[in-house]
Length: 282
Image 1: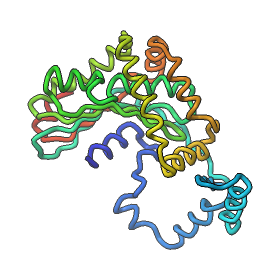
Image 2 (image 1 turned 90 degrees about the vertical axis):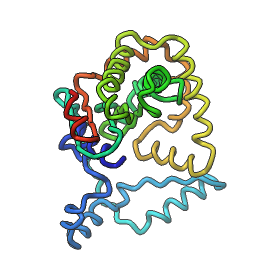
Image 3 (image 1 turned 45 degrees about the horizontal axis):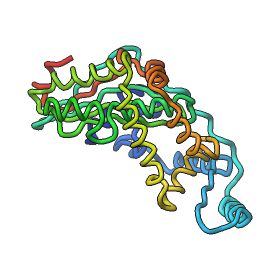
Image 4 (image 1 turned 180 degrees about the horizontal axis):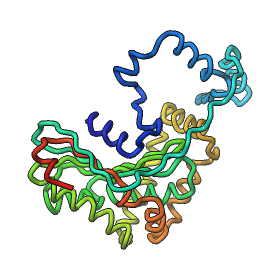
């Protein structure tokens, strides 16, 4: 649901550029004149900002010639300045966005790690234990199987050059909103305080390791992964390192990483639903 994603992004990123929709807003698009567009293009569409990714049946020499041909017509220019790091909210925030519907959409989360951070594999595994892996996750069990609060509850971890985001999300019946919020928040705090049991850790590990080959099954998949490696300046064997780290992590390392980077008291809760329902909860 676009409204809750927009509201969540704005809540956790504040005045950072990451809070702005990549596609722009109606008002911002209207404000762009031809001269501003030409100026932006001339400054940023240059060789210094270019990453060329090639995947296919060609030698290194052929790849280098192709890359040189692709960028030959570009001015060298200067590399764009690095974005300032994302800072978390100064305290817990609740954002209510009225929208008449039979269910309320919920997002809870905050600022996470940038690409290349050494704790990313541990945090990724912890997030998967909490809300990934389909019906085997903590949120799926507690929200769906045990209480019937929601058909779908998940946890998502994304990264960016200046920081990422951690997000728990679900949608629930309006009358069950308070209970659902309590379950989501308590599940995160319990994982931070006590860590995951051995069975949950191994299930999540096996699920992530088993899915890695499928994420690299086509040339398009390889192209996207290698482009990410190149753009963010990651190690060329980043996928292998990630896989090896997942295999080595124990429960305490995962818990420690989550405690270092996820603070429930510095997270935003965004609610999109009927005003009567969302106004009653904290």
